[in-house]
Image (cartoon, rainbow, N blue to C red; front, side, top):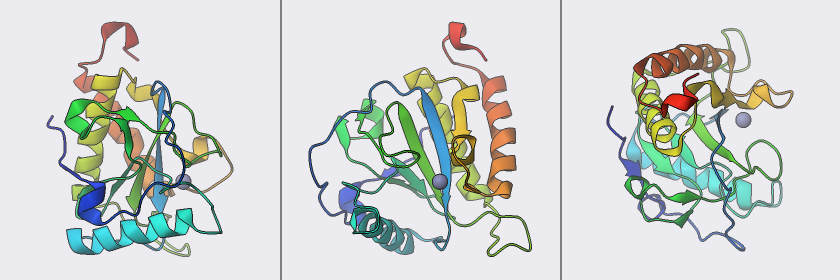
Length: 195
Ligand SMILES: [Zn+2]
């Protein structure tokens, strides 16, 4: 599976990182989130929404050095870089990832990926369905990271696996279960890591 193209921070108009960039260390887990209230499908709209999330996370409410996640994916399947890389210019360089803020305050070893949308069950306060495009990009990004950073597909988790939250919504949670199974079947991970 191909690595998805990633829209860089300069391409979406990121503001500078605030503070000193730190590495998250080895990637041991990948944590998937959703962002309720955002649902861009085009690259232009997606760039605006990612910039709005950065502004929110850097603002007084969250007071984070930057957008909390490492990658974001919109409903059109466009993938956006979140946190700056500590080393490396692009994903193909197998960059060293920076510490994020997406589960606890200090998220060592946890790579955060956020789908723009709200994926609660029907009848909730909001209910989008993850698009095929978004799920395909998520699958290729997860596959790339699992293979190149030696992460087991069974270590692809979600926000709600750590704390009491509904994030990433039931529909994405279920879709991710299927996706994890496909990645495990596809293999290509270091054999000692086979889940
Ligand atoms: Zn979350």
